[in-house]
Length: 166
Image 1: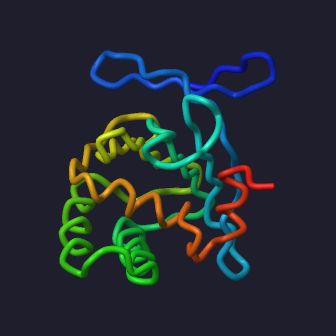
Image 2: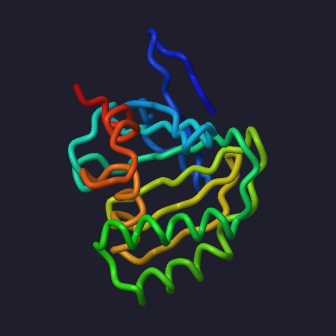
Image 3: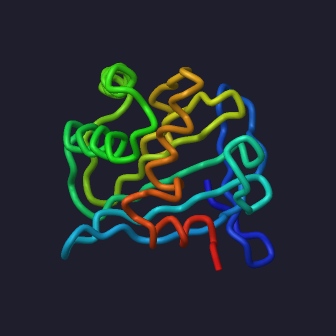
């Protein structure tokens, strides 16, 4: 749910009947590949700033798609990004990809896939606001968020927009 408070957008989510702390938008931007606009992205934290995964959790990344993308295309692209970053092993990547098969689904234009990074490194996934599952591997959270937030991301312009870099 979105709420407008004194000019700032605040995101409120409920998990297991417990309200999470109010999360404030850190930054937002659009990811384009060649000529296509693929998704709008928004990063949110309790403070509305991003320091690090540990200091900024819970940390929410919400992707609102501008095109239809199959679950398999999204998983393949995720693996490709992990390989480019080189911060996880092939075995970890394949294990995580298998787990994502049961958590993700095909997206249509207008759908939102969100990931909520917890302090313990686990990630709760949402599809259009409905919880779809949790990956509990403590290494997964940073590896997944690195795709957008690591300095060596393949989308440096989007990273700057998400972390509100000057």
